[in-house]
Image (cartoon, rainbow, N blue to C red; front, side, top):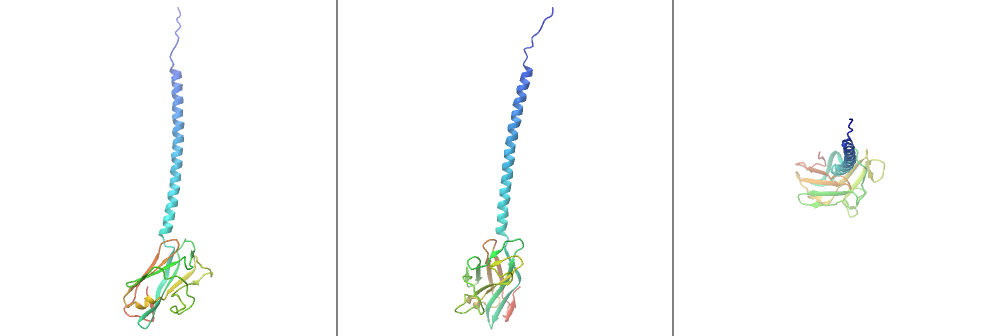
Length: 198
């Protein structure tokens, strides 16, 4: 009396189906996580590029070198000279008229751009001279200020003659990229022929 029992259990097949479903979930999750990670890396790279561009705009492309020199003739200021160079790690800057903007401000006058043409010789105030001279002190002779070069801006506009002792004035140099270099100085209590306004 051997009884044979037929096993109608589908436990093995159910376990196989469960394993297939579980593996498909793992594959879908892996693909989704790859997509999310890839998108995250792309977003991080773009954010880095935006931050770099923002830092480039925010940091000054030029910086002053030495003192600001003012000259007077009698009891009036005749001109002011600012020496500057390109900041470390910055690209060359075009110094031609129309690229560099130079502004002048004091308690009575505010001129948004005094650099409309470049004077070629001193004295700067004359019928043929615009009153601003941008020149290269050391460099290779082109119109770009590059690392290692020294340039100067001499301003001799008529508004300087109205300045009196102890008065504050400001000169702003605005390159095409980078932030504005603002040079603000106060005149001494008594005007000398040559004054270092450091």
